[in-house]
Amino acid sequence: MKAQYKVLGKLKRLDEKLYRVQLELEKIPEEIKKLEAKLNEHKNEFALHKANFETNEKALRKAELDLKEKEDFIKKAESKMMECKTNEEYQAAQKEIDGFKTEKSKLEEIVLTSMNGIEGHRNNLKAAETKFKDQEAVVNREKKEYEEVRQKLLRSYEEQGAQKDGIVAQLSPDVATTYRKAFAATKGVAICLADNSSCVGCNMKVRPQLFNEILGAKAIHRCPSCGRILITASSEIDENPGADVQI
Ligand SMILES: [Zn+2]
Figure 1 (cartoon, rainbow, N blue to C red):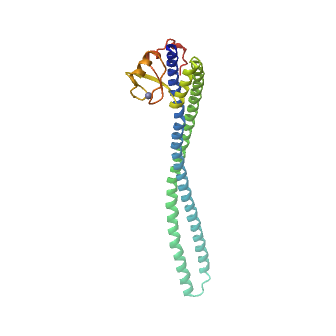
Figure 2: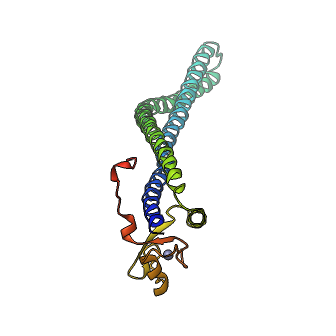
């Protein structure tokens, strides 16, 4: 049984490595999501400035058209004045022209203010666009880097998985069954140390008789609380440290 404990010791180290790789792999989509959320903020800001600019530009075009229309009215009214036959008609036409002129100067004011304002909106839009494009380039680069890391981790996971298969094959059928059950129950690291009559994985005390059997490598036991296979630190000593695939 002592030899089986040594195999379990190797398996524990490998499972721990595989688990770390698994956690690293799980982190990547979360990191990518964070990057995309940040990029989305810049995209929304850009869209907002774009809408703002377009609204203001539309308002300016409308004010320019209104102004042009008012100028045409004035021209027409002025030419009509020539045809006035009476003083009353003349005064009425003059009044109409004065009204148009007042409206015209108001529109000129609007066009001028709008033209000044639109420059600011155009600059804001340009700045937001640059910020978004820059951020997009950064995010694309970082995503590519994450993909490279992911591929590396997957390769490492595969290599160590194959190594693990070789180690599991060294377990006796009974112990292999116990290990598989423990692995399915714990999802990740299915073997942990028993120290000072406690399971290191869940900190629960184990019965003295059970602990003695583990200590003496008499039988294989799972922690009654968390279901991990319990081994002692001496089983973990690596007699062939160069054999493991490094990550
Ligand atoms: Zn436990």
